[in-house]
Image (cartoon, rainbow, N blue to C red):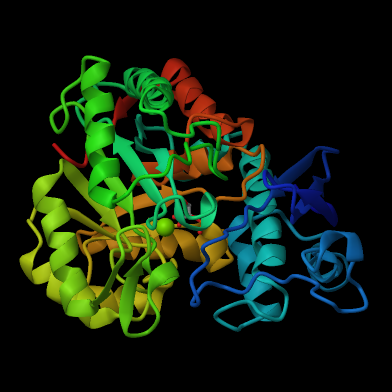
Length: 423
Ligand code: 2PG
Ligand code: MG
């Protein structure tokens, strides 16, 4: 099947900010569309999202965030090179690299390249009469990923009610995704009720649907979530564990980690101890970005003392970038990687990063961004790539439930098992 038309255009994400969509029409008359997500606590080493700023192409009502240049790049630079070619994801991605060989896709914009790459994946699957998940998984049984779900939000997503970005839960004792999600919904509801009973503000819903409840410390937030887990009749650790996204780059000033709510300003070595203490005192199974994106030595120090069972997850540290992943593997800086397609800019090279991580015994967590759309391709990628884990934010907001509901659909309609990397 041939590519007949490629159109880029601007749409809105879940924060009401512009983002890029691409639609590919094939010779059978069908059109396949993908929309790209966007982060708020973005790492310095991510592929470059093109935004108009104050350029002449900007729509001033979008306060510098319009994406007209990225859209123009799709329509004027990318589309002409793809027309009349056979649809094939690898070929489209190769073409995108030819047009912009830079690692960060700064010329075309990673939001432009990823929109086209994702639309190409969806169109390619269609041309082979497959769903997106089957394009990657083939015919065998699927493996539905273990969810990591946001309960409490802070940092850049919730007006810094808490210094760290997320307190999440992982239903590591559930036997199916369907069961796992029901546990999480109960925990999310109980957290809102118990927060209100404690006299805390629970009406602040953060960017990813988590509760923006203020806490005096990270430990207090964890203790609260432990109480919530128990309140719904589940066991902390054996049924449901805590995962933290510290997002520490956000409060590292180059010398110290500044925890405002705790009134602490700690140099790296002390912050390694602070994180170690937290891990030892709480049922934490995964910790993301405990140290800043370029504070490599703190990561290495921590890996020396971290319990073997702990998932040490690099997001801003690794930015779904092969070179940074290889450095982390060589230097033993982490043991898991967050996989975000828009940090990378292309579907195939994102998958290559995931494969390299897996080949080196890193856990892989496919992740949404804080600015999301109604698309559900993330669920298909995480499952088709057999990532083992997926992080989407909370269970609130249609841009989040679109992914959870797609996983429920896959579990209900296809032969599958439920991944448990923590067994
Ligand atoms: C993260 C993500 C999702 P953002 O830090 O892991 O929670 O946030 O998309 O804002 O980078
Ligand atoms: Mg993160």
